Length: 174
View 1 (tube, rainbow, N blue to C red):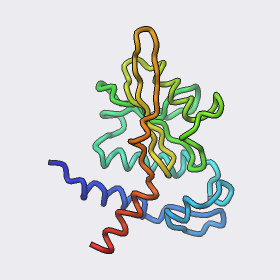
View 2 (view 1 turned 60 degrees about the vertical axis):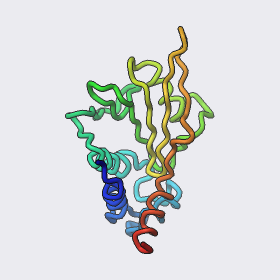
View 3 (view 1 turned 90 degrees about the horizontal axis):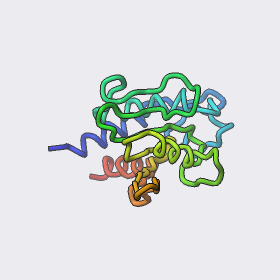
């Protein structure tokens, strides 16, 4: 049986490791970091330096290991997702900098449009996930006759700031 409390505690510990810094080099909490604007963070585009390392740790907690059951794109050339599952074709996962909007599809270069393109072009993948340190957004590919549709699964979105806060509050007030 899966021990969800243990998994949540491990996830929270990743966000409470003291890895976050503002642009003055001062350590800040995860919650403080999330409130900062991009230029107030130590690294404005923090996808590679902050977001992806955290995502790798979260994937490990969920038993996904780079090179074993998930492939991580290491070069940033071309239009490819950051992670794809191996053999099972469960999902495509793309990490974005903390300040990047992963909920709207305002323009062709938006993160949402990008994950839709991936799901439309990578054969066999049913789910797409966007991660930006603040949230996880989930998308589902559906084949309707000759058409591929991709929809955001709104009731599966995870606000990580709220999740970490709720778990932390429950730990203090059992």
